[in-house]
Structures are given as C-alpha cells and as structure tokens.
Length: 503
Ligand code: ACO
Ligand code: ZN
Image (tube, protein in one colour):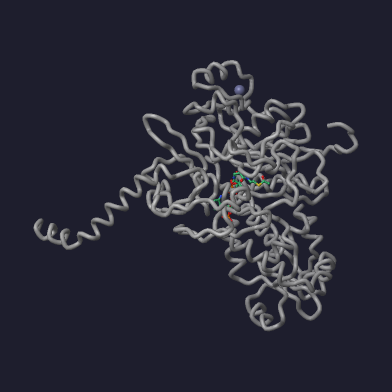
C-alpha cells in the first residue's frame, strides 16, 4: 500500500513540485501582506474563506504577526485580528492607486469585488459607500433603487395618495381576480429610509460618521462585563486608551461608570447609590420600566451610555454633547434592581421629525422582541405628542430590519382590524389616518405598503389587497410579540422645548 502511494507520488512528481513552490510562495508572500491589500481569510466559523481587507498589521511576540481584517461583504462587527495561518496569500490583491482614497467600509474598498463569499455581494450605494449587512438588505435596497429609476409618472398620484381613501379587501379570491387589472405596485416613492444621509450630522451624542480615522475602524475593547453578562464589543468606542488594553472592563449596570477590574467595580458597587438609571420612571408594566433622563442634567450617565452604545453602533461617531437629547432607558426589574436592557435617544427638538436618534438592545437581550418594544415606545411618545416621527438616518443593517418589520406588523395590524362603515361594502382608510394611529411618518407608511406590494390602483382608486397567506403569517408573527407597550401605563407629558429657549 505504501509502495503504491510512493509510486503515485513519483508519477505525480510535477504536481508535488508545484505545490512545494506554492508553499514557498505562501511563506514569501506573508511578508508581502500589506495594509489595504485583499485576500481570502478564514472566518472564525472555520469554514468560509471570503475576501477580506487587511486594515492593520501588528507584531506581537509571542503570538507573532497579527492582521486586523474586514470581510468585504460582511458587517464590520465580524472584523477581527487573525494570525497568518488564516490568510490565503495565493490570491492576494493589491489596492489600485486610484481607489486608495475612496473606500469607506474597508478603506480601499473597490467598487466591485469578486469573492469566495457564501453571500452575494452587497449593493453599491451613492457616496461610494457599501452596505455590509445581510443579503436580504441588499435585495431590498436594489429593488427600491430599481423602483426609483423605473417610474417617474406617478409623482402626482403619490402626492395625492394621503388624501385618497383606500379600500381594503381581504380575500384571496379578490386578489386573484384583481390580479388581472393593471396594478400599480411600483409607485415611485422616495425611499423613506435611505441608508445613507445626504449630509452627515455633525452634532449630537452619536452623529453620522464625519471622519474615517484609521483608529476608529479597529475594535479597541476586548470584553465588557455588565451586570451578570460578559459581552464582546462589536465596534470601536472611544473609552480612555489606558483601559482599552485590558482583557475586560467592568461597568456598573446602574450608573454605567467603568472600572478596570472586578475588585474596583465591587468597591464602586458598595458606594453606588443607584439601583436604576437616573431620571424619571415614566412607564412601568410588569417587570418592564422606562426611565426618561435629560442629557444636560444627567450628563455623565448620558455620556457613559453613549460610550457603551458605541460599542454596538458602527455608523455613528461619538460626540460628548449630550445636551440636546433625551434618553429613554428600558430596564427589566428583578429583586436586585432595574437592569438595563436597551435604550433610545431622542432630540429635544428635531427639524426633521426624528423621534429616535440612536437605538440599542444590548446583545444578551437581542432577538427577543425588546428592539420592537423600544421602537413601539418611541412611537407611543410621538402619538402622545400628536406627531409622526421617523428614526434618524442612516440606519444600521439591524436597525433597518427591525424598523421594517415593526412598520409592517403595525400597519398590517391596523388594516386587518378595519371594519367597513355602515353602507360601505369595504372598509376604508387614508394614509394620514394610518400615520395618526401609529405615529409612523407618512414616507415610512408608504414605503412599507409599497414594499409589501399591497397598493393596487383599480377603477380610479387605490386599493389595498391583503391575501390570506400574508394575514396568516402576520398572525403567527404577532403571537411571538408577547410583551407590548400598554399606553395606559405611560405617565408622561411632553415638554415644548422650543418654548423653553435653552435646553
Ligand atoms: N439577524 C437577522 N434579523 C435580525 C437580527 C439579526 N441579527 N436582529 C434582529 N433581527 C430582526 C428580527 O428578526 C426581528 O424581526 P422579526 O420579528 O420580523 O423576525 C427584528 O429584527 C427586531 O427584532 P427584536 O428582537 O425586536 O430586536 P432586537 O432586540 O434584536 O433589537 C436592534 C434590534 C435594536 C436594531 C439591535 O439589533 C441592536 O441594538 N443592534 C445594534 C445597534 C443598532 O444597530 N441599532 C440601530 C441603529 S439605527 C438607529 O439608531 C436609528
Ligand atoms: Zn454605579
């Protein structure tokens, strides 16, 4: 048996020679790996080798050379330090000079990339920026862009649509029978949630990226401990440099002050007077509470909250001016105290009708419906203010998914419950009525209806047709939303910040 193998090896001498050569090429080319170049890198799942860009290189004995990589088609939260074993230098690509200064996600990110990735390439947006979120977003975004290009002729119809009554039909038969009528499913509606802002905001607690300094592209914190959780940060956050080298930093879950060791935190906890966030508890139902605090009056807490949030928010740069914001911190209560689950910030005055600036569910609580609870609460505040609102742009990948899902469920809930008024065959509703009832801004209502492909134009009026399958799926999804905001438990009167002169 061994002989046979040896014989085969002899016969394959040429092949062996080649693989030896390529081995030495790999060894040689490790030194040729430079910041900005791209090559396949093994992901931490141990399986995929997508194309990645080298963001930074450090030599740290005894571990040797370490490479900070950004996987091109993936969100930056997967960026990490890897050693040379995970680099496939055979397929190295060097940055083209003309692209060297244009990239933003990865730095030298070229316009189009060929990758070994298991996911499709993300769409390219304006401003040379790239969404690196899940592929579903790519598809949605591309569709939206296509729609925008496709139709210009319906501009007036859209303008009018908020005032037009919409007929709501519910049966599958109607869908199929009306399917033959010219349906306007691709109304030319501006995307209500552009993933990129036209001009990044430069003020506030966390504003859209203005700078792209190399340092802020690299995760600087290894681990945080917050209450009973150890959490791995996703992105850079400007904590003081002296604590960024530590294996873990320890954060008081009540006042959010950070300490460099567990001992220091324990000492702090003995003195810390808080068992809940500062500010007023404006909502409590069951174990869920919301605390409202003023970024001017509770500056230190607000700044520490922003520092913490930045660890999980990529598309924002942190600013220390928390004065113009209110913060709504959601907690879950147990016998030890009120544990922070997430929060959102909100400008005291927004010229753009933003009702949320930044929103976060802390990772241990994610994907359990708390994000939607935060969103629901933000719209409840808007309803009390008798306003409609929208989240500040740009949205993150997860932010966009969560909002789209929330809008869809909220609007469907209203449409399904609609009853025809006496003498009418079908129930009717206007887009403005949907806005009023939900607090959702008109553009977002329209984009949701469009994305759902619900709007049809039939015999001179807009018709919404809900098919049975959609309604069934919706009902199943709503069963999962166990905790809901109950407006009866909100104790809050909005302040008119414009009248107050200074915040
Ligand atoms: N992958 C795929 N879908 C996801 C993921 C994920 N990792 N996380 C949430 N979703 C989807 C869920 O499927 C859910 O939709 P569904 O019910 O139709 O399935 C929807 O998003 C919301 O899920 P929730 O459990 O209610 O939301 P969660 O508590 O996870 O919070 C949030 C969502 C706040 C966006 C959270 O992911 C987060 O904090 N991310 C980091 C910070 C961030 O990106 N914030 C938004 C920035 S935009 C802005 O600030 C205005
Ligand atoms: Zn404390």
